[in-house]
Image 1: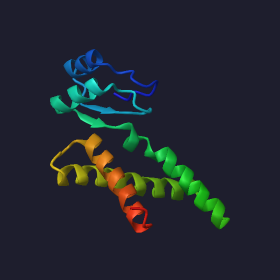
Image 2: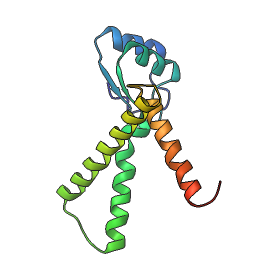
Image 3: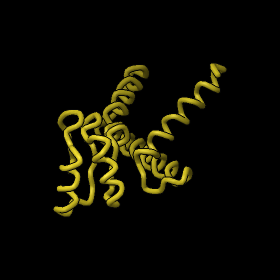
Image 4: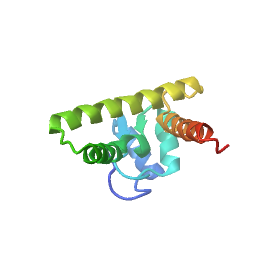
Length: 131
């Protein structure tokens, strides 16, 4: 399933229905379209759940790639942008998966993405002497 509409669209009842009907993967295509109770149901069932903050990072990444092109006064081919985006998304997956494993939450992409994001911001603040 690929919920892409509004926040809190997928309820606990919806989550149960998706599982009962054989859904094996939910990847959020919007900002928080899945209610927290539904996320817990997905995770307890073993269904693979991709949180929006990781799954939707491609849009932000491509904006960053566009800014890089503009700053360098270059234009990349569509294939080059796709290659770079693919590399970025693979790294996001690797980080979320690896951090979830490292912190004892194997397969939990929500926790992996949250912890990885927190660590990245915390390290940046430390590097800048802010904490």
